Image (tube, rainbow, N blue to C red; front, side):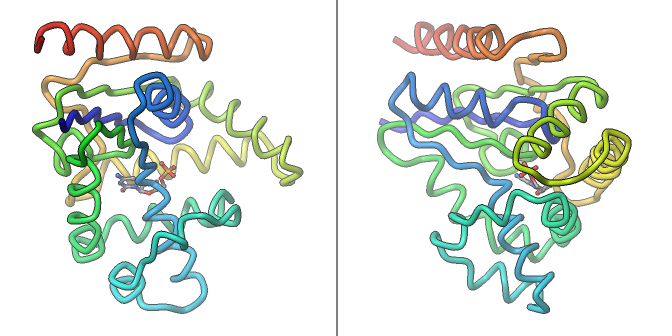
Length: 205
Ligand code: DC
């Protein structure tokens, strides 16, 4: 049976961690849709046309550690503004969302555009400072040299672009459950998300 959990939110809000943990707990498949835009952004940095890159995207393009850099994140946010790039990635995401056995998708427009019929919609947020602090720590642990101020400016620039664009801007679906992770640890954020899923599953059974 199909059961879709749509998890949207800004960069470093905790949506990826929550999504992975939900998928593990429920035995669902998980798709980090940001990786699709990052893979296209990576190719554009190499000189490929954005639409061609989106149309030629392969599953193996997503398994690449080089997609996790701030440079690729900015490139992803820039190609994500393009309507034809977004359109080229819709079918893959919708098919994934409705696969048998359940799916968790995280991104910016999953509950609003890709899967408005999702059984559960979560909107995960945290203050820009908290998100920048998390991302700064992650990058430092990976040995990527940067400063907190640089990361904060990066987070704010992406927020502005992702929320301000005309095509599928980042915003909560009307029926989304909001989870602010600013003051929650990983387990508390996961438990809040799981509670929303269990409530829906019980209502359906
Ligand atoms: O989730 P992330 O940080 O890996 O996403 C990288 C960029 O991709 C993000 O700044 C905007 C874009 N994106 C999008 O527009 N729609 C999605 N569903 C996922 C990501």
